[in-house]
Length: 174
Image 1 (cartoon, rainbow, N blue to C red):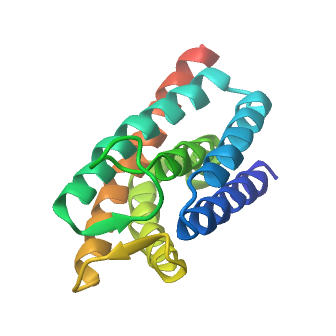
Image 2: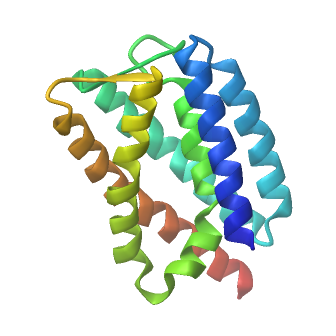
């Protein structure tokens, strides 16, 4: 049941971020993300681990997405906190994704690092493609290059977020 709640929270946030950015506004996505983050962290049985995963996702997201912006592979719509940085709405989306770490880790079981990498690599590119279709971002041509880059970033980031969550959750349980 928790995974279903996580997926709904993430999807609501994704739509708010993508549609807001497509219309030139970062505020709707950030507001929805803030509400989802508060609710997910409050409802979490492992708050410290969830907070650690959210912080990790924020840092990794800023670094990775800012590098993608700098490379010219993706141009994100809506305001950025500073010229050249990844937009705040996108980093908020990374943070909400991290609230799914506990349920995702439980679902993936013993092979969560390998399966997490596969999950990130397979699911992230279609979401960026869909965001481009809505006008929340523009992919450089040929489009496969930014999408492969996104797959690699998320193949690394997803297991990293899961590992941080797992390590802190295990310490908290001990």
